[in-house]
Amino acid sequence: MISNLLRLFLLAIVLLCVSHIATQFPGIDTFNQQWIDAHTRHNGITGIINFIGVSVLLLSIGLPRQLVAFMGGYAFGVAQGLIYSTLAATVSCLVVMCIARYFAKPLIQRYFSGKMTKINRFLAQDAFIKSIFVRLLPVGNNLLTNLLVGVTNVKVMPFIAGSTIGYVPQMLIFAVMGKGLLINDSANLVISVVLLGLTSVLGGYILQKYRYQFSSKPNDPTEMNVKMGA
Image (cartoon, rainbow, N blue to C red; front, side, top):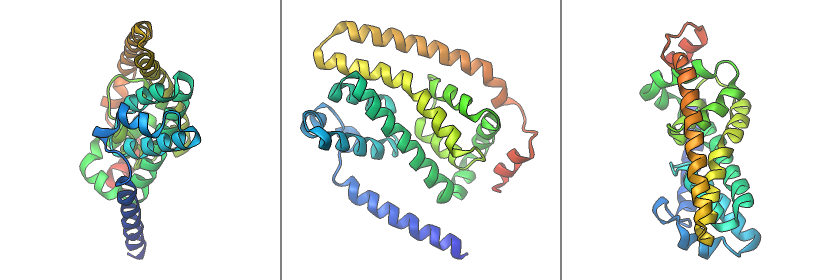
């Protein structure tokens, strides 16, 4: 009882801090070229911190990571944009997983028990490799995936490490797109579209290869524990 009250208190503090910080930052609909031009480009280390901090916050409430990579490429160029956007996505992944695991587990289990069981079954073995595959898929919701994995038995560090690597291909593609927009280079945009198509094909192949692991019935006691809220 005391533990639950402490968690609720800590969650309330976190939400208050986030809401205060959020008033200083752009919303999902205003995280655009104008904001980037005003707050990140040509602003040195302050611009980098602004970009990463805002990106972590917005990713944690549902902003697509591809958009962050696009803006990173526009603001800093391909290499730096890739690094900063991938770092932001990784930090956001860790933050969301921790919030889900320590504060929101009962709520998520109540509404997503079926999806949790499937993800737990899929990532029960070789979590590092399979998390790379998950991030390569052309479908899925980054925020929902982080929330669901956060309340399963999946170990945090292998999933985070695999996710970081799995983020890179798509983040690179969209960083190239962002850089192409900045310099008005149609060749960059064409290359990005071709690479996106290739990664989508690869993701589709991976999805077909492992589909049976999502559709099969659970036979591992740990999966039943997750479903029952253990």
